[in-house]
Image (cartoon, rainbow, N blue to C red):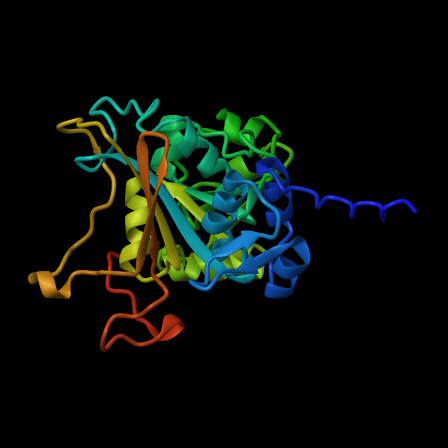
Length: 302
């Protein structure tokens, strides 16, 4: 009598398959159905996954499960805190692994936000290219209408673009001549450009998962005014001495009052990625929407 047929071997989840599954996860039920399980320490891993697949789950599952309304930011900087040289050259402060990480964040967002300064200086594409995934809506915060309509951001047709401009700044002729795929929203006043108001405006348009990508001034404003749930900060082992500053905002007088959020870190090639969970309020602070921002209001974003 022949032996029973061997049980079919389980399919091993590699990094490519893990990423495809992660893109569709938005709940614990989704995670379980996709093949993720929790270890005793609470970290998730695949039932049958490679180490690379498990690393992706550990890094991105918290963001996948963050819900339909989450605002997160990413910056890559030198050890001494600069995101570009003094001439504005930022190619590349961090390495290829961080570029792929940034594109994965874009793929997990409904919208990717940049300020006018970054849009003018870099004309970024803001699309998903280093991994699989859908392009988010590109959002340009431009209160004074500084970004030229000839920029590729408005002309390449690679993704839908939302241009947020201020009222009374002479935009009406330019909005009538806007390219296809570019939506223009004229916001009524300076207060409409504060981070929390911007997040609400995007949510009203169905864009609840928001990645704030740049530049340093814009990310700093969102952080300082309590509008971020999560910050990804990648630090490269390089010293610039001077240049374009990354994070910068009015800080406390005493070290004990500094912001110390729960933080995880991991290696991205030669770089180190820090993930800061900003949802936990500091002692004495009101929760979430009750939190009154204390940063600069209504100024032009970078």
